[in-house]
Length: 121
Length: 121
Length: 121
Image 1 (tube, chains in turn cyan, red, blue):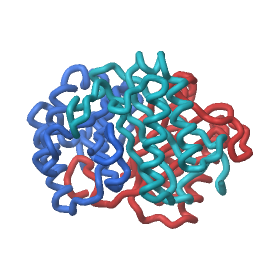
Image 2 (spheres, each protein chain N blue to C red):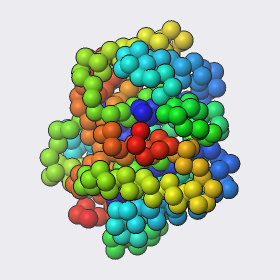
Image 3 (cartoon, rainbow over the protein chains, first blue to last red):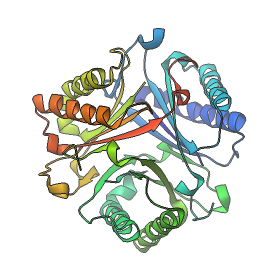
Image 4 (cartoon, chains in turn orange, blue, red):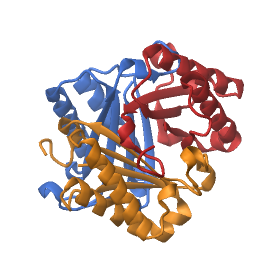
């Protein structure tokens, strides 16, 4: 039950929203071994001025911001997380989202911190 | 100072937003012993395509997604969390939100991670 | 790579969005020693009914809600966090946002939980 929250520009969402959605989900399935039906994503669309970023931070040529927040259970090691990031960057890159524009962040909680339609999941 | 963030369809928010708000808050007061005045909620409304979910995951018959994220201080045991989930599901069920459509997630922080109008709270 | 998420009323964002953005960022740079180019902020604007709060909780005279969520790496002590809160309150106060209206919350993760355009950052 990861919960994926994507904040991006409205125009990008209209143009590529569904392939971005698929790309992120496929990366989670591939890199984390997530069940293909375990899919919960929230897209929040923005005017450009609502997404504030520095275009050069970390020596990256950033043109717009696509923020992907992933809330997931604390159980993956660092290598797995990096594999997840690479899988997301690769799949979104394949549909036209520049890896440089991604900001991916992970927050972890416990298995007991979820209710997905029934208490014990 | 829990912070409750609800993402739901625009139409549902217009129809039931205030009773959903009350239901979640009453559940926090009941299950966590929260002060009744300790209420901070953010509602974010969406078009259906912005809320992506699998309608069958975990053998649940899911029709729409109502995501409830609760950021709260790390101090509740598992039984208390499950009681909170059940209280939310029961109260929202009573106003017409199907428990199957709920995705509740908890993130925890420390008491020192909050500023609610004054530094020491 | 803190990620700052601000939820506020639409009218306030239109009027003061860019100075609020600068004020929060300057406070992070000052209180946490953040690099000035390390800036990632998401603004989400709301109608008043989407921001639900008690106007008196904690003996604070609250008139509207400006929620500032900061996701940052686990490495700051309590005094530093309080200094950050005070710096934000002071800087936003200087541009006309009442400190009483602020709800600041911090969530922490690890350095390995970020991808900002490249895997190793």
